[in-house]
Amino acid sequence: MNGLRLAFWVAVTLCLAPAAGAEPRWTVVHSESMTVMGDQSANMLRDVALELEQFRAVLGLLSSNGKPAPTAPTLVYVFGTRKAFEPFLPVRKGKPAQLGGYFQRNVDTNTIALSTDGFADDATVVFHEYSHLLVGTAVRSIPVWLNEGLAEYFSTFHLKAGGKGANIGLAIGPHVQLLRQRFIPLSQLLAVDQSSELYNEGERRSIFYAESWALTHYLMTELPSGQSLLNQYVSAIAGGAQPEQAFTATFGMTPAAFEPKLREYLRGLTFKAWVYTFEQRVQQEAPRPPRVLAPAEAEAWLGDLQLRIQRKDEAARRIEGAVVAAPDNAAAQLMLARLRLAQDRADEAWAPLEAALKLAPEDFDIQYRAGVAALQYLDSASAPRQVDVVQRAHDALTKAAASEPGSPDTLAWLAYASMRLQAWDEGASAIARAIQLAPGRAEFRIRQADIMILRGLPNVARPMLMDIAQRSADKVAADSARRRLEALDAAVSRTPAATSPVAPAEAPAASRREAPRVRLDLRRVRDGEQRAFGRLTSVECIAGRVQFHVKVEDRDVVTAAAGFADVDLVQYTESKESTLRCGARVAPDPVYITWRADKPQGWPNELVGVAVAVEFLPLDFVP
View 1 (cartoon, rainbow, N blue to C red):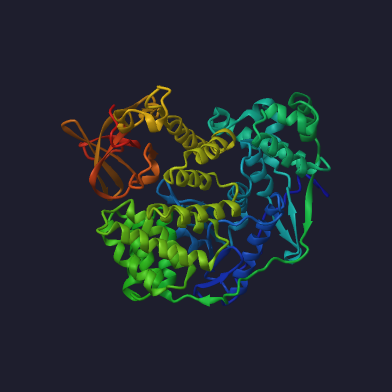
View 2: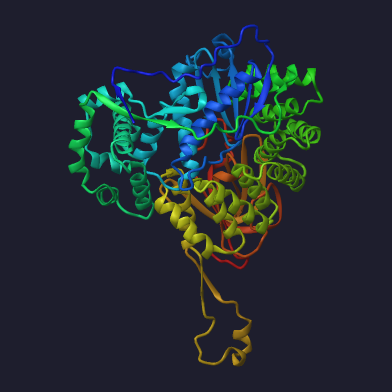
């Protein structure tokens, strides 16, 4: 441990000054968990990969097995100058944000973009967000204060000694100064969840971040077994313990008794930080050698970065130009498909998607991203052959999973494609492997529960969902699990057809022909929601939404959602046909459709509202 005076501030830097005479061409290198491309030399890009992989290795120390967490495919863009980086910065109030680097998480890819001559100023932002990703992948349930505290603690990561060591947990001066003036009771800090005002409210939010960092810093650096105790605390919370009880049991005193220690710590002049020495440098590069990108391919990837930060017009010019220059380039075709989806021109997306898949049949990056894009295409467009599209996405993701078997996101998307094909066993196997690799991803476990429900195994799904609803610090996941539990609580309740003591074989013929009476405790209708019973006649997939047509008595009730994933699917029948897909229902299904009256601006007047749930009912159900 090294003592660091508060005034001594070490900026995070990658030491990436561009080499003299570097050619303005784009090169790509691969490390263990990411693809790094930039207008720098291969050696410079390896240094970037080393910094990020070492950071990932340090965060791995928090996991139960001490190994780095596998993550979604991560793409890193490296620009040599601020000027070159400017067209790829998010726009705020009409101007490019003044950032040296940023982190962005999308459904298919994690993106890090940075400029080598400005990253030192904003490295903490990147490392903070990357910490959330890595911790959230490895840890199943973590309190909000500790999640933010760890992200701030590790955001000051600073590589040293040529990559053989790192400073971890440097003091954050502004946090210390703020907390010397203002402080909230620790009992309040521990009780914060994602819905708390303290977490979401203006200036108080900065106090929350500062105090979360301070408590984490104290526990990690001042207690001899701080990391082990934090793991015990997280386990206690995950087991259902209340925050104050878990804190007292773990650290040997109540939050109120502990608070003076923390306040005294913050009044000190020195703060400790770990100096970690790596036993060996992490693998800098995967077996694939560095490769210089063709100009059109580089333009396609750069256009995709602009697309992800909502600079669509610039992205369109760049991507469309790349396709004209190199129509046989897989990356250019893939990015054209993604562009068309973003432009609500989904009918034009399938041809370039198919082309990308055919042009690079063995390329993980293309097969994975094109497979995900194909599944998004299904939710955005009225594709003529839905099953064919799902099968194509499934095949691409199968190839990607075979190429990178340790990629949990690839397996999770493969599980979703299997669901769409009603291949329940394959989907269950894929999502189980994804959860094994990334136990902290609550959305994976919800997908696993969905598969169990669709397989007709609600009793298997129930404990999975209860665990997420009760223990997950992810409010979105917890709410999603609760909605599914409400639906399962409305499970089919069967009563005997006859109460006569006569044995079944001797029962009257009329009794034997009667079906058991069924009572459905349906999903509870919440405030602001409406529900109607009818027949689901078709599911219409058009640009930007999925529309559900339900015949309710003599009228057609039409609701919509942005995608299938936004609608709760509830099944009270064992029929495998009870699944959502685009097209007409040959035999209209009896359903309850639930919606909210509010709808996004620009949606058609014929829509009664936003679809919330579709509940498939037995064929003989009578409301």
